[in-house]
Image 1: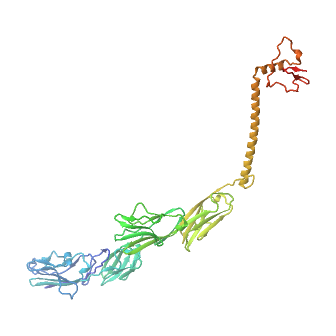
Image 2: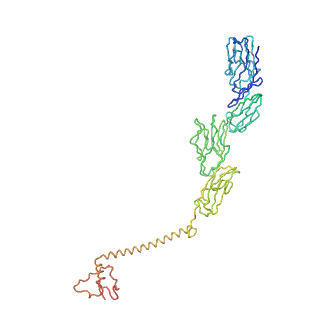
Image 3: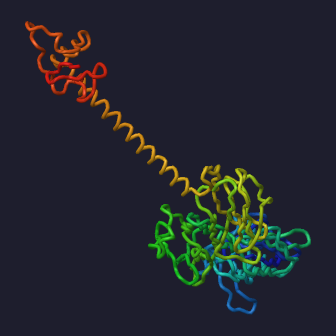
Length: 525
């Protein structure tokens, strides 16, 4: 009695990066479909005639890649002494016989099926007069990717699901679906990275296997525009989704074709070289996936396109960051007087057809600007009031998206009122002349008063002389009319001091008309 075996065909889905199986092999009619990494059992058995354990069995398993290949290669071989020999092919390492071998079950179990296992498996065992012969066809179908490992953003990738039977469909990231055996992805990005599942639908069951697409790229947008005011510093972002393990790897920041700063990969991550431009500063703390730098804007000439570039596998991927520099100015710098007429100007380094400029006050909304323009915008403020004081904002936008802004502070004060008119020079000259005149007048008056006070002090000093006091007393108490008022026995008055203040002036009367002072200070008629 010969046991009849079934012919099984194994379908494998091989990915270039990572393969994940989510279902068991599918049996349909006389075929079995499975995925890479599955464990498949090839049945080959007979019933024991005496229902007793078998001994002295003879036979084995052989494998050949195609039906026409001769001779077949041995997997296992048993002789009458139950001695088992093994072949020298890789399949032997992943194969084993059933534990019920001596009960008539000669099934072969193959684990971790690989694409090279495709071919024909022959089972040929005998025990006494009973034989067990089975021919099993293993057909390995692969899932291939046209890209290298890993893929870089911008590459074109084809994912092919090779299935000899059944209906094939794909489910990818972002709810992507396809009913074709081959999925074509042009200019891949990080949005395409992730798990792609190939579904092979059979009559009673669906077999699933997935392919993980690994993409290295930048997390920043492909192109970005930012606005920076003159004199500011900004962070230019450039970040990878992960640090590439493939070598060599190089990075750089460019402006046009000129290199601003470059970097190489070390054991600790990125190793920056000294910047060629002083406006570029590299971060102190390096990150494996971060290639960002800091840009200092000084003039309008610092605007333009800055490119972050990664060189990997003899190819370049890059990100472009367009910097628009904003410069604001006022026609009258400093403090503005109420009622003055001024102009506010906003100038940008470069623009696109969709770039717009808007002036607005800080207490206005972004949609309530005073004026809009392109490339440059100037607004005129007539008869400025205190309501115009404060922060003025020049804002640039593109396609209704805000790019950046620059601010200008306007100080408004009350004007200075002058009786001489509006000319401050006349006011200064008149005030200075008036002060000088007052200083001269007060100086003269002070000199006169000081001289008078000095004379009075000198006169008081003379009055302290004894002769002056005695003479003054006699003049006041004993007026002298003539020389007959003195007797011969009386001592005559001493001579009057020369500088006595009571000495009358010569030629004038001291008491009345006709009275004059004699040579010794006596009055004569």
